[in-house]
Length: 220
Image 1 (tube, rainbow, N blue to C red):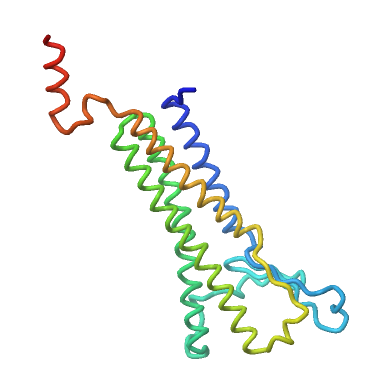
Image 2: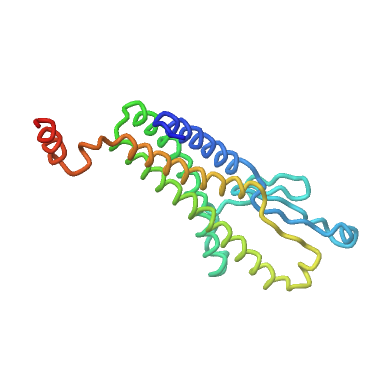
């Protein structure tokens, strides 16, 4: 089955739209990290169950919108480890929204290059999506490192016994960010294939060389 240029760019467009939607939903929801108390022990200990996003924490059914603000934090009140975690959080909340903005402009560039059917523009758009996916990859990966470091610091402060009845896990918001990353890669790959498919054979051997061969062959 032969895949046409139109099918490639349409599929790339759908993947790009889904990638933007997944990342936007991921950034706007508060299920990046989930803390659950063992139901058998909620009567003996305070209910610490919560789920958090990049900017907000929902703890015990109550939303705390200003609970995660690494930019407004007073650095003099934190230890070196906590300052490093704050720096990681600042990087996360910059890279992921920036990737979302790049996706928006990437969609515009993809539409223009598809309509123009220009191999150069299609290749440039593919590279653009690869760069955007790199930001998403770095942001999501850094969040995992940040979360594990926060858990390690909490264990150091309260001891293993204090976390014996607590279960932590990553939520579906982080999963959507990883899906967005995969779709960004797929979008860039499809755009690159479309660019290669739309390249004229006569121009593929270098500037000016292909047309001369084409004219020479057809003279005889």
